[in-house]
Image 1 (tube, rainbow, N blue to C red):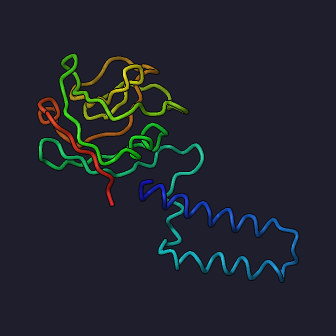
Image 2 (image 1 turned 135 degrees about the vertical axis):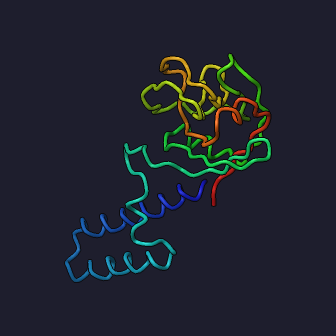
Image 3 (image 1 turned 120 degrees about the vertical axis):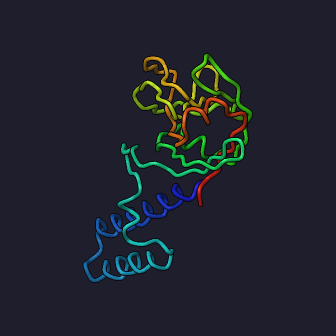
Amino acid sequence: MTFPLRRALTAATGVLLLAATACSDDSPAEQAPSATSASSSAPASGQPPTSASKTPSGPDRSTPMDILVTIDGRLVGATLNDSPAARDLASLLPLTLDLKDFHGTERIADPPRKLTTEDAPAPAAAKAGDLAYFAPWGNLAIFYKNGPAASADLLILGHIDADADQLSGADRITIEAAS
């Protein structure tokens, strides 16, 4: 489980505890100690009170997850979106994959297993720098040119901040969770 997901689960547990306490049939005098103990446990966990506002909830998939990407020995900035497929990829990290060119548009590699396609976001056309998953073949794709029209088979997982020349010649990629 990645650190941002653990942080989200910790925050969600605290919110559920407070909601359950507020909805209980106990008298107000009995509720006060529970609410106090729930709120006093937040600093003990090391989570600042603002972490809940930075954590994705429900259908909000726009909060990115930072990852560390090394392309042929050079570290570049990258993020994963918060889709189920991207979270599934994050569960496989760290990964080091050999890349090969495909169709003069992208570099591809096979992860150790297929990723989930459950609750996939709406199809979007890949753009240069996008990290994507092609569901029918089960491979990852790093686009160094803009891809074809949007397809339900291609799930955008995130974005790598590298120029097209670096991406087009990439032979090896390492993807790690950011700490």
